[in-house]
Image 1 (cartoon, helix red, strand yellow):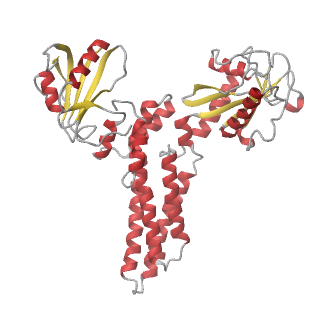
Image 2 (image 1 turned 90 degrees about the vertical axis):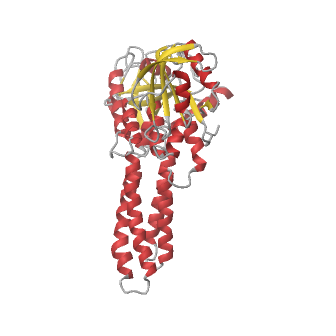
Image 3 (image 1 turned 180 degrees about the vertical axis):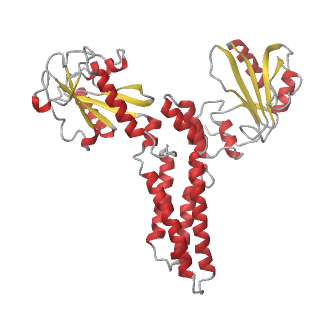
Length: 446
């Protein structure tokens, strides 16, 4: 649902639901001060926490004793007047306070992401910071937390602002050349001064775009597919790595028909482990569909563990299972029953049944995750939306560098296109169509 862009005062529970020692209710808008006065009989000094009795303005019933704070706009998260009620976290207390707020004229319940959207509208956040804030709320591992903090702290915003300043500088030189096109030093303005600025910016963009999508991988989690012949022990390995019965384990081939996903935290890096159907000549339509999905998931994976059945080894995966040899990690399973021959003596050996070799496998997965997701740059591209706009900016800068310098109007337009694409990254221009999607992913109360 689209967040409303009106001037009404909104409220919502900003902490998690359920029993807790403390729950936080946030109010934002022009009527926040009045609502606080109606509930507590007064408004504390801004940014000072005070203990107050909360009373229903209509029934005069005592609701709770709470810690109350007031933040006068624009010095608040949303840029508006904001009040916070730190109440006891029992369901009855929470429901009573929320119901009382709902009966106050001029207040309404907030929609998902509406607090953050108001912060964006009031220039307290740009889009990259809002996305970083959403990622911080969803972060499950240390590496995700660190990346989200950098993003919400404005790291990508600062980089985009630096790039934007360079585009403006180059554009001013081209515009000057247009204004004085009959002067002798016009070629020097474009070739000697504007082009080096654009070249340096173009190279910087290429470096960040050539990051192997580490930021997106870290945000979404490394996708690791378990593939192998039927009955090679994929489900047993999934259960052993997750230390629980996440998958059905059976001696009967073809037990796994659909992909099973589990999420792991390996050394602070998020990994999604995907168990798939065993590869063999399928005996029925359902198993055929399962095998088809194995190929599909393997083609989308960041890494494929090719599990080799030690009692009946199939050393190499089918040629059409993977497109890149670098995405394959062969693992010899059932080492408690057999050992690899000399030709394959350096392969990683495990036993999903006894647990032998699992520490070594986890170590390899952790190292691979770190290599594929560790930031080479302090600023990371974390979303497909950001990458798409930066690629559009790069393409416009490439057009400038490849175009004829004497065609000044076209070169000026190249830079305008580049600046608009860069502006869409931070939300400074032309992003209305993506706002609902971005802020709709937030929880209510943020």
